[in-house]
Image: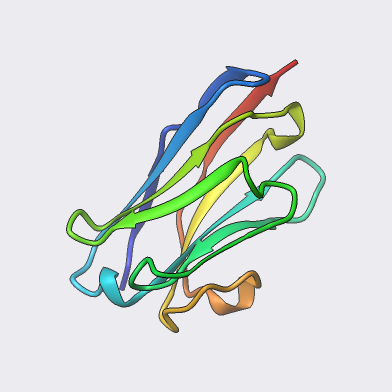
Length: 124
């Protein structure tokens, strides 16, 4: 079992930055691939970024490439999402997810565990 707790969301002006954190419980964190997804009101949950178990491989949605950076610290059982140059269209609830397969996945079906989400609001 893996429990995920997101933090770091909030209100920021367009062009600003936020860093999201996702703290995971369990001794097997370092074997899990991790992902960030987001869901805006009235829309489906969509892929944002993912990182493999070792941190050597990452993957991004086209909409966030060159603005967002995913990273992980296996010693701290934590994955991060650094979000720069934020836009109003980035407003959503952001969810952290863990995949026991260990790789970088864009599809929700590959993730076994989900956090409760943290709200990010970008004002124009």
